[in-house]
Length: 431
Image (cartoon, rainbow, N blue to C red):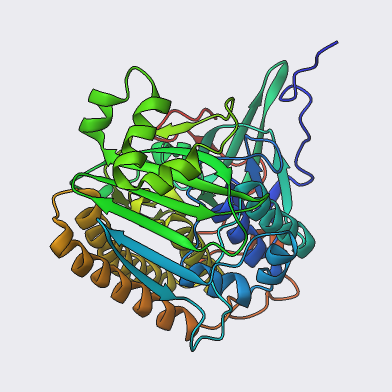
């Protein structure tokens, strides 16, 4: 007899949390871990199973590796078999530029973990810190009080009554199609100007390989060593070209792009098993969304998305998780204003430099300069992260005040008590 995992889902252990996080991938799990390490009661919910895979380029840039090291998670990732990347090579047509990654640095190199490894380790660390994580559970809506302040989530399941769980703050870490962003009608602050399409596949690689980034006029590709002796090999093209050439089959069109980039890269990709599955992302323009409001915040792709061509999505997710956690724990309106100002400053720079590459309006002669601009942004990001303390509470809660009702940084009134009036939010959450 086949059972429905949603109808038999686990229920939250509490009725109220300091923070509820919708989404438990890298952004959500990292936020849950940091808040729980600081002593908050945290619930994170994800629709997908624990340890499941997701579409990703895997490559971590230096800011993300620095954070994982600070959090004590770099060593577990290496112990899980994630290969250490010690060089990165840019292929501009037939010209190659190889850069050593470990020279003069405290970090040994870079890594590109499979999401089955990275997300699981972050979830495990969050649970170890005391966060409650529920997988294969769907959030159907948010609910708000009479002033429109978000007060919690509504969980809906087949064959069961909906369940409401309240929180001082609800964090949307639920990706590009964020339910939380839709529920709160988060304002779009900026939209990027371009989109690119990417087709991903995996093939065996020889130990010791580094990152390789390939560029020829109008096309790009990447070779990214990851776990299980496999490299993620990506073909990247403008979305318009994808619509024209990939409609009749991703496999042949991808191999044509890889062959045009580098016969050696195409030969490497051809080592994949014949039944290997490809994954495609047609692309959407990048965006920056309003990151917080009364009782809610957005982190990861829910708040800021840029094209995958610069492989900076996970780095953005981990950085914003730490800075958001610091704002929540500080307990002041000023902390949220500072968080948004800092996020917007770096997000605008990353979106600018990513669109400069993802637009495919470059020539090989000027592409190197665009990459150098992106590298300068990364160096500034690393310097900013290195100077930040770990997120901690600004002050302990008074002994007479229940920790479940701590007011977060963007709360303007006490949370509603049990039995208080609740009202429909902007997407129709019911009382």
